[in-house]
Image (tube, rainbow, N blue to C red):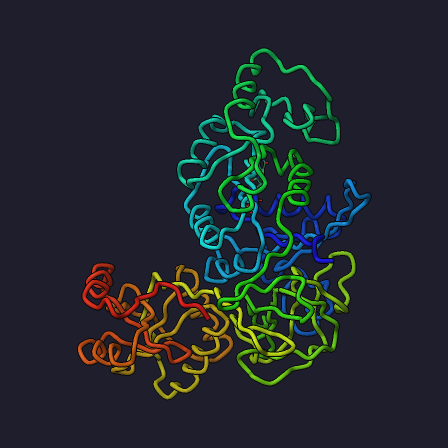
Length: 515
Ligand code: GDP
């Protein structure tokens, strides 16, 4: 009974309409009270929502990290309820490894593109992460109620830039001022704008005539692309494309249908050489995100576990791989939109929030028997490296604790050089640095500044002991240890990396680290 879960994320560039689409998906899925709360506009994100008991008690805002909704569908085998778990990937502003890692916990993704802009940098970056893990993508071309680029051009761009086959499932009948609705290829129906707001309110013309001026274009569109192929989609080789307007409600229900019908149910997850199927009896899962308390006086955290197999029941004992002894999960958080009481059960594909005091770390496996380790949850090579300089040198201990904590949470990565006492933090996005400084001050009472570091990137080193030692003898000034004590080569430039890679074939220089 795991096949009715669809665990997915939305990937997009800021402003493409992710928030608007999220609201509409939740609205259609019977989580109405959430609409409008997804992004508390004009307010600090942290102030978002407090309607969850545990959030109020603990001051942790987890509301929008996981949004669960259900919808009933008519299928060949009768009525079926599909449970959707939508995981939030913070946009540009909070861009961090968190975003990347969330994508390791989903089975599929929706890629939202602004019809006027096409593929933008962030969309592309996130897409590449999906591709690493062959996460299948459904494309939603948003804002067709406005003047946008030519649909053919947009489809070509997706196909060329992302090296994906595209298979349009619908087509806008005009755009912007001449927008007359969306033609659904499968049914031949056109959903129509209505009233002064020109929204879609449910009016569909079955077998509608296409206005002459659009007829040729639409004929071409229907004939000129590969047909939808479920296997190619699930392998990540083909993306079905839906045109729509999240703001005006076009294409949203088609999108939900597509996720229900095509998107994969929980996939097996790699654990070394093994693939753990969702049908395994044992409860297993992995932590993909840890969120600290927003209240600096508490050290509580919520660890987000993606369930891989089994049926979780409240109070169950699970062993985190990082701890080695079991913990009882008494007050897990489940994210059902309708009824957000404490979780009683959860299935493969679901997300559970586990309150803890720092025992659970990103990348940890949790299981009943403690016999397996999920692999493939990467740390990413930092793109920005900075030296951390304390204003008050007596606070070294606090700083170390803070850096360790924050790296556990995935806010930053920390590198302790083999020589010297200049600790280095690495991030993949600038904003992480700002978050670091403000949290150091607010939560750890540590004042620090960040200075340029001589390094441009880092690579995790692996190899036989003798080879590592040989390398270390010559390059000690460029070596550091990460939070787990693993050896890292600190490179002054990308050239430096390629030079060493060539010179040391017996070592591997890895841009990601799997835990
Ligand atoms: P996010 O940054 O990707 O979450 O984007 P938002 O959902 O906040 O949308 C960014 C802006 O685009 C907002 O002003 C939205 O009202 C607007 N927007 C979103 N979807 C549509 C759409 O389908 N049509 C139009 N015209 N505007 C839209």
